[in-house]
Amino acid sequence: SSNDLTDIRNFVSSNRTPVNPEYFGAAKGMNVIYISMESLQNFMIGKTQNGQEVTPFLNSLVNDENTFYFDNVFHQVGQGKTSDAEFMMANSLFPLPSGAVAMEKAQNTYQAQPAILSQNGYTTASFHGNNKTFWNRDQLYKSFGIDKFYDSAYYNMSEDDVWNYGLKDKPFFKESMPYLTELKQPFEAKFITLSNHFPFDMAPGDTDFPAAETNDKVVNGYFQTAHYMDEALEEFFGYLKESGLYDNTMIVMYGDHYGISTNHNRAMQQVTGEEITPYKNAQLQRIPLYIHVPGTKGKVVHEYGGQVDIRQTVLHLLGINTNDFISFGSDLLSPQHREIVPFRNGDVVTPEYTSVGDKCYANPTGEEVDLESCKPFKEYAQKMLDYSDKLVYGDLLRFYEPRGFQPINPEDYDYTTDQT
Ligand code: GP9
Ligand code: MN
Image (cartoon, rainbow, N blue to C red):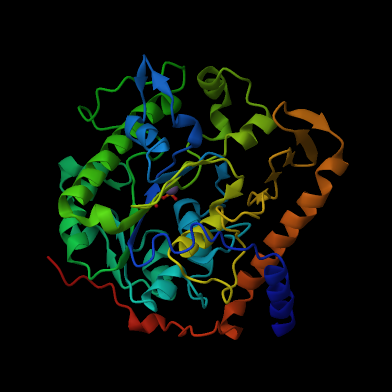
């Protein structure tokens, strides 16, 4: 109801964090590329196997002079996995407690980032080497106001180039370049990688990187598929440099969700050298986040945050004021960034404490402590999730008109293939 909307608006505006004047507008007018790094968890950054780095390219970006690398950012997805992460990038709302929001609520009214950017002069596009109907994206993207959707119909899906969930990452980036360079600038383009997907196996001959040496095939293969994705990312950066796009494009790369579930705790104990307790498992939900901004001095950022925070961070770097939009996230570069990270299942991580189920742990020892220590932020996190759920289930943005924002009409978008 509109009463609910008023409560939500009050909650969101009383929790607003100020922008950081040092970075606001640092990427003004630039293109934006998002890369969804399939299943990549942060523990893989810096990891080695037989003395070789698993992700040498991503490791090199940690200290790149124009890159912000965030080492305490967590995924917040539910059952919608990749699509839940996309939903957070676009809306700074939480996905749903059960089911995929892309399946359940694609027809809602949204005031999504592609629509916002499009009304700031941007062309918006998404690239994905699988069918456009996967995760109901062809519906969802219309509600987000995404102009162009390059799905498998635009790629050479030859047997050699396809494995597991779709087009392999290397041909995916390579074949995307002609489409990308044709987009009218400035653009926002999203790339959804697929090769590092469960069960993490590879076509024979696609890798000579050593597998991990546990008794668990899934964990062992993860090292190889992650290495392949890392190589593909490096190639993509090469293409961007060759095309000249690199110098006026902000690149946002994020792990979409965990790759290794708790079914593999025993092998993960071998990989991390520690028993995977519920506390440790929560810590393992970190995903890598990189934001590369040409001409801006980057740094390693240790703020605790989640995927819901990324939209605020990116829009502020682009110099776009977000006060009129309903966002649950808080700019990771804000001097007052809020370090409370709700997981979609209600667990919560802060710099000091970790709440898992009905237990409270102190960081970094994982020692169990009195519930009172977790209570204040656990309640706050629950409130955030509840308000977000109320908004999404009730489709409440249809009653809200951000100043200067033109409502999106999904019927204005058409992803039927005009190529081939
Ligand atoms: C397929 C890709 C994988 O389109 O998004 O989906 P996931 O299983 O990771 O959600
Ligand atoms: Mn995924």
